[in-house]
Length: 293
Length: 307
Image (cartoon, rainbow over all chains, first blue to last red; front, side, top):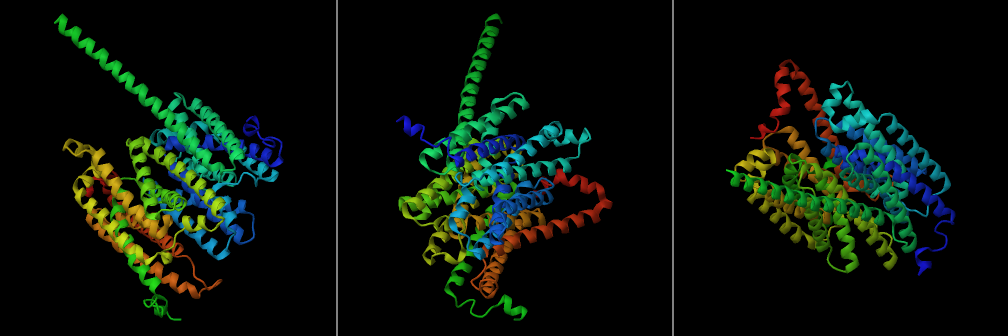
């Protein structure tokens, strides 16, 4: 029994050590960028950029280049495309069009290249076993860079995400901040896709941050809570994926939904109780008023 | 090879697969154009795309359970659509709710596809499920596709006035006794039927392209809802035909001589058209800069102008 829960090699195999390290870096970067994603209501962008970057990876494999190069390039191109097309409140439409165009290209690359199917599967759904030490360094440094940029620009990004109008009045440039936000999403996508896969990279950005934003009263608390939730989610998922050999993306996305639903339900029941208490109080006041009148 | 030869290649209509593609492609394009105009006005592009993606989960689940793919698509679509609608009925929560539901369904499809490849040792299934193709549609599906298209259009026709009302001015609609919640729910039903039916026959990728692309271009060209719908239909059908013809041509193209995927043609045509319209409307707006006041008023009157 104990052996089932704590199988040998969980921490000692070198590929598992790589997975723990890369997974933790990915959790931190997704949670930090995800906080802004949720605040801005930009889940679609967070879904589209990693998904579009898949096409780049397929193209890079076709040309015999490293798939990371293709991932990064297409993540960058998708977010630039969304930034350029998505002005004037048509963000979602622009995101959809850029996404389908990138996927159409990916379909073309796949059909020309005859890419080996398990490789496509790994790019789409993540491959924990395949992470090398070099990948760990790459993911780690990219994550560090994103976290440093966010720490540096935290206040303007926050203000712009909460209210673009106020930020503009305060002398911040909205176009520039939109661009920086999209670049951060692109960097986070490039770091996350090799580990969790193109389809599920965004579940780590959306789930923990959404739950944290509902729970926390202050923005900075929400950021740290979101990091904590994402780390726990990745660690549990790695452990379960190792035991069951099911794809890690399934566990990550399932935990996202569970965390979000738990917080939503908790809030709904608390809100139900407060409104009941309030109406109770109101009732008492009116009855008292009636009596005294 | 002359220009006309490209647009009218020999043997185009004597190929049974191409004829089926023309028929089904046109039906899908028409339904998606009409539903898509509402999707664009209501700002539900993410939900529309997500419903196409979750179809893959349904397909994989149906494959595992050994039932017809159509029921898998519809089951996944309805459960996700209802989850999105009930978790995200407030605008502020809709984006995140859609994201979390979509993420879960994609995670589930990762699991299903893993189980399929582990149990049946076929590794091609994931790609076939994730990227459908118009040329691999079974001709027997035509009846189902037409039936589902018609029922989605019928439902849309029944709720047309209140839907338009509550999409454009929700507050006024509420005062007049239209329940935005009920209308939103009914619209979600017709969206699910339209999207799942097209995800089944043309794949999730083309389903999003045909839902959002023509409607996005058409609503830029005209502010009248009915005109937009007619325009979107024309754009959708025309792009699909052009895509089919180019894909048919591409069987003679390098590097493989076995054809480029049709989704590549349709999606890039959509993006190019949208880009053209955007640039043209930007230029027009700049040339109108002398009448700066109207331009300033545009943003606020954009929604009222639908009436």
